[in-house]
Amino acid sequence: MNYWRAVLLVAARDLKVELRSREQAVTLLFFALLVLVVFNFAFDFTVIDFVTLGSGVLWVAFIFSGVLAISRSFQLEREQDRIQGILLAPIDRSAFYLGKVAATVLFMAAVEAIVVPVSVVMFNFRFSGRIALVVLELVLNTVGFAAVGTLFAAMTTRTRRGELLLPLLLFPAAVPVALAAVKTTTHLLAGRPFERYASWVALSAAYDLIFLAASVLLFDYVLED
Amino acid sequence: MAGQPSGSGWMDTTERALDLLVALLVPVCLYTIFQVVPTEEKMGVVQRIFYFHVPSAFAGFLGVVLCAVCSALYLWTRDRRFDRVAHASAELGVVFFTIVLLTGPIWARPVWGVWWTGEVRLTSTLVLWLMYAGYLILRQSAENPEQAARWAGVLGIVGALDLPIIYKSVEWWRGLHPKVLRVSGGQGLDPAMGKAFGLCVFTFVLFFTALLIKRCRVARLEDQVAELTHRVARRSVHTEPA
Image (cartoon, rainbow over all chains, first blue to last red; front, side, top):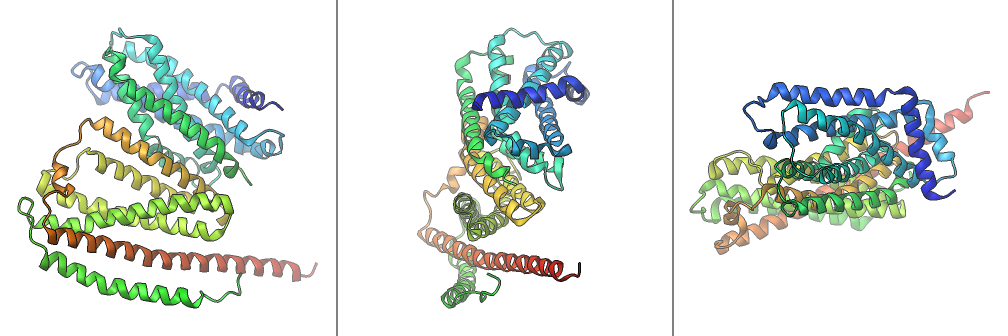
């Protein structure tokens, strides 16, 4: 079977499961919104400028809900031993990996697409920057986070510690993504010129490429048994 | 494999010689640090903690690098010995970086006036330490030693790829490098200080090596015990009446 077709099929399967059950996206969305609410109570945004703290608030919401999304999607694989089925299927294992990354990115993007506008309303922020750059930045950093997260989740969800272990491995490894995301978002919210944060965008893109490539090469070793 | 003697003759001799050398060098280091080396004029007595702090960082990095190299070699060759070295060096890396993270604030408090800052080396060392602590927890959580070795191999490689990116990103995040660190950077060092540094680094690296050899031997014995237990279990299944 064509490699990219296999990737698409894996991603489409995850989406289909989600569309039928509709449990993940709704839960994740409410979780991310609750993070915003918690921050709304924790910091007094009538005094603090949203530009200063907003990017951090948003990315904490995305990263926390992202971890949940990734670990949930591998828990589903584990139930009824779906991983066995994948191993028996005549597709490349890295295609399975890329399909899972794609599905995770879509889930996270769906949450982001709602949380970002909601936060603009909630924190009374007047955004004047370029929407295209916001989308680019969100996609680049979400891909990096999902790339490493999916590789790690394939290991951690099969252990005794399960979901507890994933953030333990993922957060330190995703430090560059978190820093790049927060910095870029801050510059974007402040409406600064692209040159000011171009190197951060480049860092996110480099992170994506390095870890997608490394994970594709290493994923065989993860799913050997 | 199970019937092997505990180790070849020359390995035992090397190990013992190394132990002896470390046992001799540590008191020499302590004497040098507290009696021979002059007190740094700006920082005072507390600067002497550098003779522990910096060599520990050297040993810690040695552990991390060795772990990455042996992880890759393990995945390539599937030779258990590489995995044992990777595991042992990750453990030692965590131990030595713990020393680094403990001695750092003790020095920073009187000199910088704060226990902790967001400075690039501090922050990235902490992230590194957390990552390798996670590596050890992952190994522990795997279902069997073979799986632990494979997963650890993957994590060892990903971690090594990540470290320079983490360092770079934290550096950019902080903006410019604080000048305070240059004082510790090495210019204007008393010649006695330089020599003491060299001696301490040498001793710590030897100490690291001695511990590594011992940890690898323990790991090999653990493997043998697991193998024997497995064999006994299999035999009892076979001999049981149907």
